[in-house]
Length: 595
Image: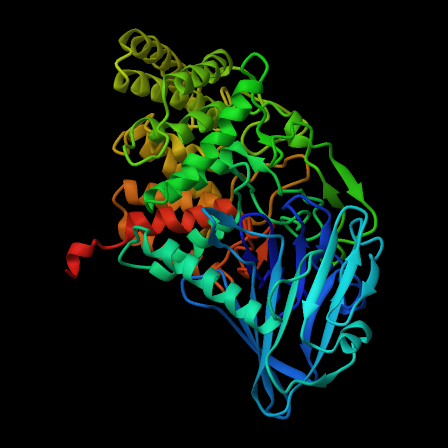
């Protein structure tokens, strides 16, 4: 049965997902939001042997092993047959510096070599067109195959027999073979030399990238894998960061909660930037700030959507695809996301929070300046104007609106940070202006979001329920962790939302019914709240439980079944990987304990 035990390869231009037996089952090319060249993840008809799959299959295969090459985005899969023969597949997308710029072509490099016995393999390369509805036109030469689609033409260059590739004929693997699937251009090297050159440079790039990170003493492997995957989720050309690389993986079985996450949510991107900043990876912040400033200068009256396309597209019209049956047949498959139309007022805070460090950090090649500050002030004006107005909230309710506490808290955070930035820049009048506005919003939240009967903050002004977003009240600084009101809120949240070592985002019925699976980022927010409350032993126990919920390669999707720990929701989910980093950094023993 298809599941989310998948590995990720990519190069900050596109990403691909590889299952446990080395099949590429999802890859949108040339961009994260493109038509998927490989889409078997959403089409398991014929046991995934139809369109949209790329396999280097071992005949009579009985078991597999899979791991990443240490501190890289290079994936190694080993397959074993029932006669003792075995092969090793190496998968990656090239990424390194060349000629003073990033080399990150739309290219998947695969090598396969025999490691035991006399293995027989079969190359199954079946690209798809128009969301799995058709196959591209195929032509070939002596050492290559061209796949010609309406919007993209790919060329496979290989030293494997072309006839075997075209006919999917099983053959003995006697030596290492290379497969370079990329632009429709003549490859300038021999296949073996080219694969080796691309591999060595890509491995060196990732190892150096990891070497420059600041990591905690404990859980380093988990943090490094999360950080690499967050980096892979960035579209470097514009600075955008996708929420996930997939569309329509349901949040829970047969729920209809199938959304397209291949876009840049300003909320999610802030959390990614902040997590990587904690590791010393400030280049992501610099690049993302470029993306945000482009949005700010084109926004009308300071209005910000919660989500944009990765190349600043503002309209992400949602439609259903009928050519793909969906993950495990659980459609619908959706392209686009209606959330671009939503009013989600927390976005103003997330934009300003993401940019704040750029005004203070002396390491940056381009520190934020006065013009950047004035652009952010437009977002601040909107935050003040909307802090007590109804919206769809951070959970993106589609048919109802409230004055959501989490949105108001982020509006306050926007004003508070603008005051701090202005003070740092010596703009005392602006600092006072934003400080007074922040005080006004804080008073409103403390009065209207507090429920006297429940002795807790609640999810909306005048409401009586709780949600995971309330855990951010202390995180952004509205209240200190020692404030009794925050302690009481955490107590009610854990009473109503905790399921074992997992946390629901809320439990009331929404547009799609009552949520059933835990929302991973809320569990990590809960861990961070426990740390802030000095309940460290409890926090470590919950964190260890979340580490067990990762797949075999250390990755997480959006949601987890609290009973079975099965992964659900789009994958890999940046929100969830952020949580691994933040909680590990908060919980780890200090380096001074061993030095």
